[in-house]
Each structure stands twice: as C-alpha cells, then as structure tokens.
Length: 240
Image (cartoon, rainbow, N blue to C red):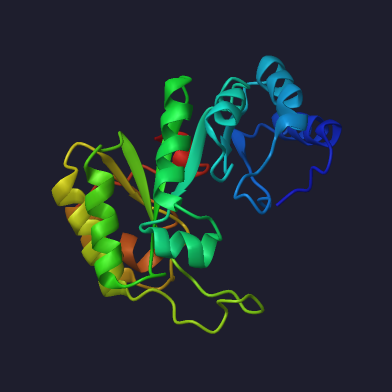
C-alpha cells in the first residue's frame, strides 16, 4: 500500500490517484491498543479529497466508539469495511479487543446512524467451525444489506504464522449458511482467503454468491456458458 504518514501526504497521494484515473482507494493502517485506527488528524484531509476529486474511499477503522465513529462518518468516507469478529474469544485472541462483538455492533450502529455505508467482513477460520456458524447466526439477527466473507491466511513472521489456512470446506459451509439465513443480503467472497480453490469458488459463484474478489482463472473457465460474469475494478466493498 502507498504510505500517507501525514494529512498532507494523504492529499498528495489522493491527487496523484485522481490524476491517474483511479476509481478510489482503501484507507487503512495499524490500530492503536484500543482497537481503533484514530483518524482525527486526517478528517479535514479526507473532506478535502471528497470535495476536490471523484475518488471513492473505503476505510478500515477498527472499532471506534460511538462519538468517534460519528465524526469519522461525517468526513465523507463512502464505505467502511468492519471486521466482524465472530465471537468475543476470537476478538480477544486475535484482534486484542475485549467484548469484540458488542464493539462491532456499537461501531456499526454509529456509522450507519450517521448515514455511512457499513460492509461487515465475516472473518472465518480463527476459531472453531461452531464459532464460524454461530457468528453468522448472530450477524443474521440484524441482516446487513451487504457483507463480505473472508478467511484466515497465515503470514510468515507473525504470531499466527504457523497456523493452518482456513479449510475450503469451512469457507463453503459458512458462506452457504450465510446465504440461507440472509437471502436478501448481497454476499461477496473477499480477497483475503486461501487461493487455489477453483472447484469451491465455481460452486459458490454458481449457487450462492453475488460477487467474488479475484476469482481463479480455472473457476471462471469452468463456468463458461453457465454464468454471466461482470468484471469491475476496485475493492469489492466500493461496489456494494
């Protein structure tokens, strides 16, 4: 990702992207110990970008509390990709956030109340299969308009680098469960997932999903004549 260590650098980078014809960008960064990407120093820069360009902004902001979430939403960010932690134990163990499900609900409600678009990203594979399914069931109690399913992938050199990637069967099972419980929700399989599962991808595209980020060439080929695929550029959340 491109660095933007200061508000001025963010404006400069956004200007270059706009001049190059970009659709938009993902705004992200490391969260503080309280589980929040604090953007107070950047909010005026974000407003300026929205006023002077046509760029769409999708943001990862962690779990800001209500008032901070409202301030962030009023900056003009187009959409927020908020990790749905599936359970409090997963939130505590991987995101280092206490009461993670309640924190997600507080952040999501505040952003939506301020008129922002929130796209929960349901994170599979960090807990048990049962936690995956139970998390989907809790999310379905107040179905979002759209959501993205993502799955844990180990990254070498990190605390979870030695863990196994999420099994295809878990991804498929939880995604199918989400569709059965949330028939009116736009459902997308996100880019964060183990790659290479062409057969799984093809089945989910044909039977379950409304969209998929970066499908495999083999999956696309196997669907020729069965499904009409529309390709769009940009982060999946921008289009939801």
